Amino acid sequence: MSNDTATATTTQSTWVASGPAGAVGSIHRTGDGFAIRVGREADYHGAYPTLDVAKRAMHAALGPGADRPEFTEH
Image 1 (cartoon, one colour):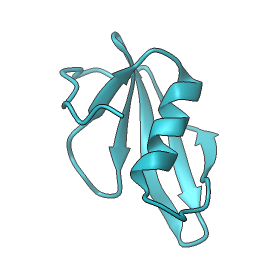
Image 2 (cartoon, rainbow, N blue to C red; image 1 turned 90 degrees about the vertical axis):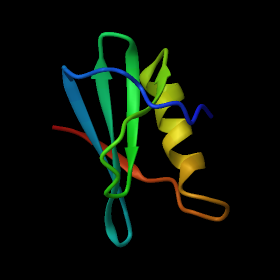
Image 3 (cartoon, rainbow, N blue to C red; image 1 turned 180 degrees about the vertical axis):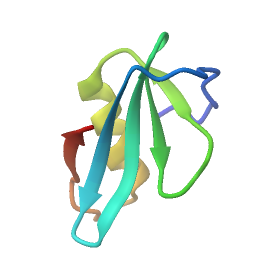
Image 4 (cartoon, rainbow, N blue to C red; image 1 turned 60 degrees about the vertical axis):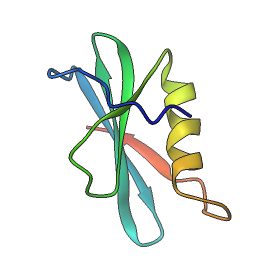
C-alpha cells in the first residue's frame, strides 16, 4: 500500500467504508484513479488504479485482524 498523499483536489465519486462500529474511512474517485482516507484523516492516501485495489488498500490500512468493511457508494 502506498502512503503517499495523493494530490487530487476534486473527487468524482465517493464510497464510504463501514465496519461494525460505523464508518472507518472512504474511497474517492479522482482524476488519477482512487484515493483513500482512513478514519478521520484529512489527507488522501494513494493513487490506486481500480476501485477493487483501493478497497483492498483500505482493508489493509485498518490493521491486522480487522473485518473487511462494507463499501457503499454515496
